[in-house]
Image 1 (tube, rainbow, N blue to C red):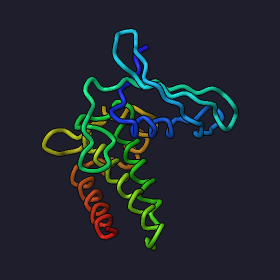
Image 2 (cartoon, rainbow, N blue to C red):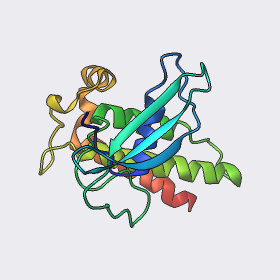
Image 3 (tube, rainbow, N blue to C red):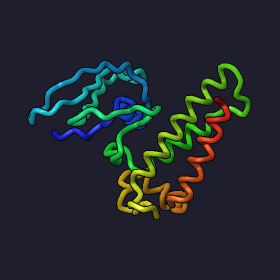
Length: 179
């Protein structure tokens, strides 16, 4: 067994949220432990019982050899592209977070809006990590999930660097206005 690399716990939790149990439920109380793999590397192991059907769930993610720095705000990972989610999945995550921002963002709604936009910006940053050096469009080979490939086939223009930068900029501007 060679578990996939998870760069941060936020990325691991997002992955688990996107991979439901066979009953369709994503909710389960997550108990975590750091475990040693057969090759001596460390991994995070998440276990729990599905709230939908009672099935036992388990996810194991290889930990980075050196912990990444997440200073400078919320981030899902370091400078390298994700091994857990492809660019299409990251864009779907960004869309979902941005779509959850209410029109009126005062008080508690403002806090939820800031949290959602922060995560939308971070997810867009993840999409951009798949783009070739110097810009351009994300190559089709980067899309390895069914969801990601389907989104890329439907809307390939959304994966051009200039469009990603424009969307990220508008989210960041809105986030700055929310304070």
